[in-house]
Length: 147
Image 1: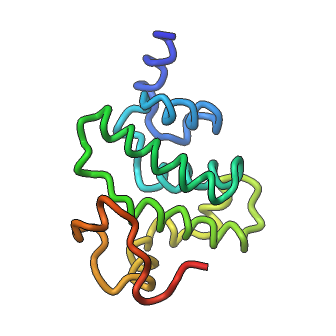
Image 2: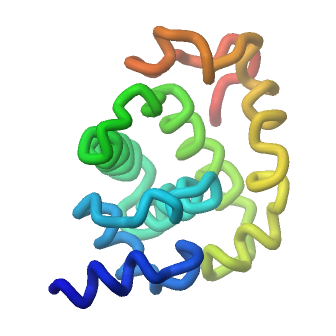
C-alpha cells in the first residue's frame, strides 16, 4: 500500500492514472492535491456519470469532494453549487458526445476545460464562486435551467 502512495505523489497529472486508479485514489482522499485540477474535477464527474448514472454521480461526487477537502483541511474551497452544476454540465455534453473515454471527451468539448466559467454564466446571473450560500447548498440557476 505504501508503494501506491509514493506512486500517487510521483504523478505529474491526474491523466497519469488509469480511470480505476484515479477514482479509487479520489474516493480514499489520497490523490495528491496538485493533481485535483479543474480538468480532474470534470473527469471525476464524467467517470461517475458513466459508471453510476447522473443521480448517483451527484450524490457520490459531492460527498467525495466534501470529504477530500475535509481531509486536506480545505473545507472553505468546497462549493456545492459549482460541484453539482459541473456534474450537470458534464452530463449535458455527454449526451451529445461521440467519445468513448474522458481524454477524447475533453478534446471533443474543449470549452469545458477552457471556458467553464462562461458556461456557468449562461446559467447563473451571479458569481457562484463567491456567493456564500452557493458554497454550502445547491442553488438552482436563475437564467437557464439545466436539462
